[in-house]
Length: 279
Figure 1 (cartoon, rainbow, N blue to C red):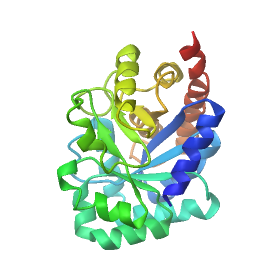
Figure 2 (tube, rainbow, N blue to C red):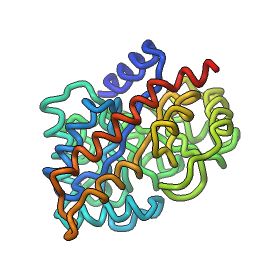
Figure 3 (tube, rainbow, N blue to C red):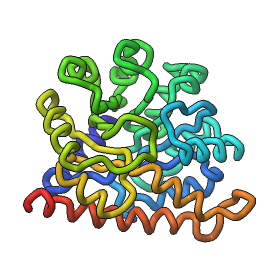
C-alpha cells in the first residue's frame, strides 16, 4: 500500500509542483455527507486525503476541528465507520492516497493488530497519530510499517537537529511540518521561515516535506508551496463545512460544494507556487 503514496509524490515531482493535502473529519456532520465530501476532493484538486478520526479529547486541535469531531461523534461516527468511509471511497478511486489522522486512544481500544489489518483492507495508505512520540514506536508505528502502512511523523519549529533523526527514524510516506507551535487553525507563519525549516528537514531525509497549519487561501497555498513538497489544509475546509450547516447542525445542499470550491481555489494556488520559487 505504501507504493500508492510514493507513486503520487513521484508523479507530482515530475510535474514540478507540490501536493495539495486536504484534511476533513470523518462523519462530519454525518456519514453520507462526509463520504460525499471525500469523493469530491480529488476532482477538486486534492492529491492526498487526510481522513480525520473523531476523538472526544483532541488536545492538539483548535476549536474548529474539535467542534467537527464532536459533531461527528454526535452523529454516531466510530472508528469502524471511519474505516468504512475509506473503504467506500476506495471502490471508485484506486489512486488517491488516504492517511488516517487522529489520536491513539481509539486505535488502542480497537486493537492495534486488528486496526492495522482493517486499515489495509479498507485501502488506507498511512497514519498520523499525533500523541505517539518516537519513543513509543513499538506501540503502533513499527507494526504499521511492517504491515505496509506509512507512518507519517510530525516535526515542529522546536524539533532541532539533535531531535530530528529520532523523529525521522521510522517515518515514511512524507514528513508533516507543523509550521508553528500551538493548535490547529492558527495564523499563517512567515513563508521565509518555513522555507528555511523545510530545507533544514531535507538535510536529514529524502522524504517529501509537507507543511500545514495556517493555510486558508489560494495565496497562502501559493506562498507555502514555493518551498514545500506539499501544502496541508484542514481548518479552512472544516470551517467551510461548519458555515454551510443548517441552524440545527445538519448538512445543507451547499455543504459538499462549499468544501469543493475552496479546494479548487487552493489547488490553483498550489499549481502557481513554483512561479513564486522562481521569482
